[in-house]
Each structure stands twice: as C-alpha cells, then as structure tokens.
Amino acid sequence: MNMKKLTAMLCLGAIVAIAGQSVIAAEKKAAPKAETANKVAAEPAAKSSENSGDKAAAESAIAAAESARKKAASIDGEWRDTGKMIKKAQAALKAGDSAKAIKLAKKAENQAKLGYEQAQAQQELKMPSYLKY
Amino acid sequence: MKNLPGKLLLLSVVSVIAVTAQAAQYETDKEAFENHFKGRFPDVVREEFANGVYAIDPIGRESWEAIEEFPPYELFVDDGKEMWDAPFANGKTYKDCFPDGPGIAHKYPHWDKEQGMVMTLPLALNQCRESQGEKPLKYKKGSINNILSYIAFESRGQVTDVVIPEDDPRALEAYENGKKFYYTKRGQLNFSCANCHVQNAGMKIRSDMLSTALGQTTHFPVYRSKWGTVGTLHRRFTGCNSQARAKPFKAQGEEYRNLEYFLTYMSNGLTLNGPGARK
Image 1 (tube, each protein chain N blue to C red):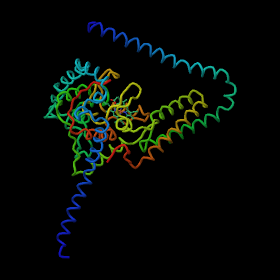
Image 2 (image 1 turned 90 degrees about the vertical axis):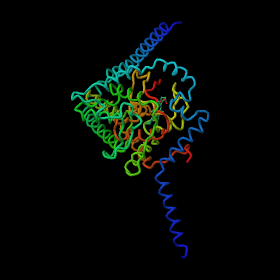
Image 3 (image 1 turned 135 degrees about the vertical axis):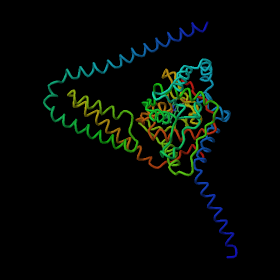
C-alpha cells in the first residue's frame, strides 16, 4: 500500500471514529433531559405550594457550598467539579427547580469539605515509602 | 584541656559538614528519585529517560519513531522562527531581550533573585514582549507554542541544569514548595503526581502507559496527537490535575512555576530534545 492511500484511510478512520463518538455523546446528553421533563410534568402542583421555602433553602445551600469551596481553595484543596456543580445549582435555582439546586449544592459542599480535609491532612509533607532515602 | 584547640577544630569540621548536608537536601531527593527509576527499569540507560514513555514502552516507541520521521511539530518550529525574527512595533526583536538566543531553553527555569520568583521561559518571553510594548501571549494554547517550539529546537543538545542557588533561601523554599506539590494527593481521585509518575510509572492507565517523572521536562513544548497541536508544559500540568479531578492551577502561576522548578531539577543532566511528539 502506498503512503497516500494509507494516510487517506487513516483520516477516514478518524473521521468515522469522531462522528461515531459525537453521536454517542449526543445520545447521552439527550437522555437525562427527557427524564427531567417527565418528572416535572408529573408533579407540577406539589412544587408551587412550597416554592418560597424551597427557594430560601436553596439559596442558603448554595451559599454554604460556595463558602466551603473557598475554604478548600484557600489551602489548594479544591476539586475539579465543585465550582461547576455550584454554577449548575445556581442555574437550577434560577430556573425555579429548588430541589435540584439543593441537591447539587449539597453535593458541592460535601466535595469541598472532603477537598479541604484532604489538603489539611497533608499540610506536612511526608515522603512516600516507595522512595528509598 | 590540652586538647581544646583540637576539639574546637573537630567541632567546626562537624558543623561545616552538617551545614553542607542540610543545604544538599535537594541532592538527596534527586538521588532517591533516580535510584527509584534505576531499580524499576534497570535495563534503561539514563539518557533514554529523556524520551519519556517511549523509553519504557517498546510498542508505543515503534509508532513514535515513525511519527518522528515526519515530525508534526515542524511547522510550529518554522512559524516560531518567523516570530523570533519579526520586529516588534518598536523595531526591536526577541533577540534584544535574549542576546544569547534562540538556543536558551536550558537556562530555564531558573531562580530570579531580583523578582524573587522562579522564572520560566514562557514567562520570560512575555516579560520581554511587555517591556517592548507588546501584548503578552496566552500560556497554554496558541502562538506561544510556535516560538517555544523554535527555541526548543534550537536548544537541542543542551543539558538540563537547574541551579538552586544557596545565597537566597527563597529559592530553596520554591523548590520545596514544588516538591510538596508533587507529592501531595489531590482531587476526587486522591492522586499525587508521584502516585502516577513515580510509584506507578510503567503501569497502564486505560490505554496509556504512565511515563517516568524522570525525563518529563526535556522536550516541551510537545505536539500531542490528542490535542492536534503543540502545547506547553503548564497545559500538560493542567490536564494531569484535571485527570485526577483536582481543580487545575493557573498556568504560570506560582504553584506551577515551583512545580516546574522541582520537576526540571529532577531531570538535571538529561539532554534537551524538544519539541517532542506524544500520543
């Protein structure tokens, strides 16, 4: 086989692979949306009655998560997704889904606390035992 | 009592030794580090570690050698040369900031006593640009990689030689901070850099074999097939922190510069061979 043909085949292969991946990604993204839509449709009445209490609870959950995140960051212990979760919680709150906002904020706060503890536990450097001095 | 002068002499000899030993903690670190890899990969000659994972992955090496026949970073080197030669708006060039250039990669990172910080090549390039009235370049992606590629290419054959000067305790502190960073477990996966690149070097993580920390800094910037372009060392740090699900730090911020100082010191004596090509 000559070089040009090989390159062409490789390129084609890559394109097919990329296209395949993005289809999978699109499917993955689409699935949870449909689920949430169903849930919202199934229980709209129950939500609105306790909405204002939920909203305040969500706001304070988000505030708690944010301050825990900052505390973790102050000793370089913040995890990758904590800030993203808080942003998502804020978006959920804005969209009126307080329950979802609370769930995300709690998860973020938990991560932030673990990240803080993780960094705190390693304030003193201990060289690992697999290195022989 | 007759022997007092002799005792004093002995005492001062002992204290000199003690001081010297203390100052050379980083040398002991390096020895332990090198011995670890020597023990793990007894058949790999030291200089080979500059080839990253391909020093220890014979299968990956096959395709790497084929790729190096038509190096994917070549165009970036050419573009970098143009950047190096092109005058700034004020008529000056990079050469005015770096009279020894372009083959200067082996001088970085170094301790900058005046500014009290670790100076890296990308940071020095941007300080040059700003001193000439130019906008700084971004530190992870984009054209900084062109000029870095050119400088790396022109620096091939120079030897990694990071100095931790003894006349400024802040330099040792920066080294120690970089070391601390390297061995600190981070992120949701609770991994330190060392967990992957020291303890588990040679093991596979998904389809990737983990490279040894020794030799990781010789070839940056690097063309990565996954990126489809050339990227900086700090971009790579960012990716590795994210991989362990820790929040990455700022490229060219203090954490990563100190990390680079430590990590590059560990590769002292290895020949520069950038830009590199990696999976």
